[in-house]
Length: 329
Image (tube, rainbow, N blue to C red):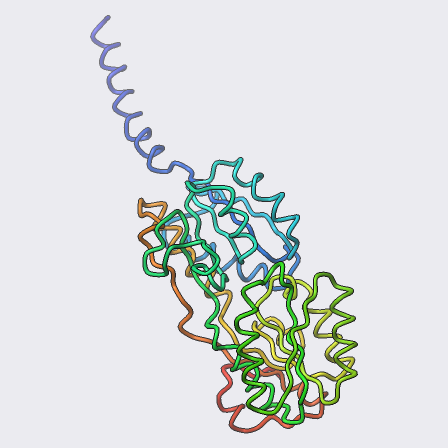
């Protein structure tokens, strides 16, 4: 080989070297996300924006070093069952499971792919993790429930609508079996106020209409909606029915109140998606889910809809207004 050719070849190799290292550093990682709500949900874009913004702040940009595959369950168990093998076939580096039904399906499908969950109520009781402090497997994430909140919902309903004597607690046992515990606590609190509270299980939209119509036959009726992806998906129907039948209702999530519900008390769901990005980042950088403690909610938000209160003929107590984190008018 002539000396000039050798030098040219060597120079090319030196020039290519850094590009090869850079390409290795920018290897695209795969992330699978299964959302419990519908893609058309008014809250969906805000959740995804918060999640992706959180990732970008930590150095992960879709299209550059990250690919995200989303699936949307819309509160449907069958959609979840179909989405799980589909997402696993993409060979993800990390999975994000939004809600208990999604987490349960992934828990049954894989013990090796790291999973970060959000909006899950009882990960220990459901057998997803060994403990909150040391999950011990391939799963960690963020819970959305302090069981004692059930009594708080009942107290809020009584405070904003003191005439209520009969309460329906509505959720889908298939998508929200964890809601039994706070519902029982709400029932116990009702007894202390000489009120009656009954659990109203629903499995499809038609049953929602039936349950609310039956509740109206009870004198001075009220409604409580615990955490549940199924009722969240059908929240417009529920809020509209509560307005039609003039039923005061307390909800677990702000987006019900934004839709026209009376009052909500619960976690900030969008904040959980933002926080989930930090755990995805730590796992992509080598940490194990088994050693990342499950995070419990530390703050809850109280949101009031004064327009709805006025339509129901309710006078919101000044003490309740003073405690509210947000008032919609």
